[in-house]
Every structure is written in structure tokens, then in C-alpha cells.
Image (cartoon, rainbow, N blue to C red; front, side, top):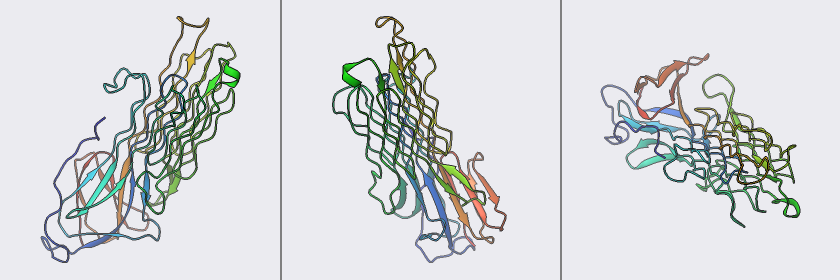
Length: 328
């Protein structure tokens, strides 16, 4: 699945030089990748949140050369399972896409897309990612690992495991997707795991929680059904319940990098009359750049914005891919 656009070029010129009268500016950042889609094979694990990387508050800032155009890539969320719009794997979910901030010649800061659940075969774990996808509920398995980029501090958490169907029965429940601040929950015999919680940042002047994991979905042949679980704080999608639901997992919230809720499976009288609600799509990512009050930012395209925080700081927010120029 492609990123949400890609505009502009890389930086030009060396550090320490003035460009167009503007001096370099030190900035803080929040870079969140796209969330993973809700899990496959119809009793799906929740999608993992996209990787969450930030310098605010108190971390190492980046330096943007004055008046140089830098490319910003906002990662798209992954497809949920059984989504007919998914050309790559229509019966499974897909991972989220990376978000990337270019800040110098050959220098990038990246966050890894969230993992999905590849579903339905024995010992297949959830996919790794910025945060990992939850385990599919049909067979016992582990959630996908988080922090796929190997960063310090970690960009995310693992997905939750599943014990599989109890005694070979007809109840299945998937694990929850990992979130930025906590792992996805483990599923029980009939209840899916909840999504891991996201992290809260005030980089734009307002405390906002993002990058929650998707809740696991459940399946059943029983009219009481298996129970789907909620997504994590920060926009994680809710998992679908098994019976008598025909509603799929809900998507992760756009521009939070949250995972989609896992899909369900309901056999009203066992196959071939099954209904198979799909997993929710992962939420797209976001990139936020914070400069001092005297910073001068311009961004493109017009969907992206420059605003002023309550303390006067300049905030460039990217909800789609584009470019930024800045300086003092």
C-alpha cells in the first residue's frame, strides 16, 4: 500500500550556511507511522500502532538549514483483512507504512509502520512493526514484536498473544495490537485482547493521545458469540464480535497512526452460511515539527498547516506528505 503522497525534493546545501537570509533553526519533532490493518482469517488480531518517535520534551532536537526544502513523508495505514480494496492480500491485513522526516543530506528520521496479523496457520505470530500486530485467534501464537526499527527509546510495543480455540472448539479470539506505550492484551478463550494504549504529547500545545493498538476480533458458531475488544487509547479501532454481528472491526483514527480492529467470523449454522466481517483499516500517520516563536516555516501542499502554540512556538503539522522550509 503506498504512502500518502510524496512531494518535494531532498535538502540542498551544507549546514552552517544561510539560505535566502534565514539562519538554521533547531526544532522538536513527533513522527508517527501508519497503523497496521486489523487481522486476517476472520478471527483477527488487532493491528499494531505505527512507530512513535519524538524529541519533545527534553530530547535531542534536529537542525533545519535556513530556507532549504525538506521532504516529509506521512505513512498510510494498512488495509484491514478481507477488504476488497486491498490488491495485495484480499483475505489478510497489511502492515502500515513508514513515516519519514528528511532533515539533511542523507539524513532521515523514520518511524516504522504498525504490524498486522497474518492469520490462520499454526504458529504464525502477528507481524512485527513499530508496534506489533496481535495474534490470530484460531491457533495458539504470539503477538508481533514492536520497535522493529531497533530505536532507543523504543518506538512501540508488542502485540498480544492468543491461546487458540479451547479444546478444539468453535470459539476463537485474537490478541490486541500493540500501542505506543503498552503491549496489546492477550486474548482469553472467548474474549479478544484489547489494544495497547497510545502515548500523549503536548508538542502542539494541546495534550493529545495517539498511536493506540487495535482491539482483537472474535469468532464463533455459537449465537452468544465470541467477544471483540476495544482498541487502545489514542485512536485504536475496536475489534468485531463473533455473533450475531455482521459488523467488522472499526478503523484506527486517521492521523494518529492507530491500528485497526480485528475482524470476526460467525457461522450461524456452520459453513457454508458463514459471514465474515472484515478487519478495520489502520489509521494514517502524522508528522509535527515545533520551532521557537521566531521560526519561519512554510509547508506544502496546503492541506498541511503552520499554527502558533499558546506559548508562541511555531507548529508545522503534516497530515499528508509534503515539504517544509524553515529558519530564523
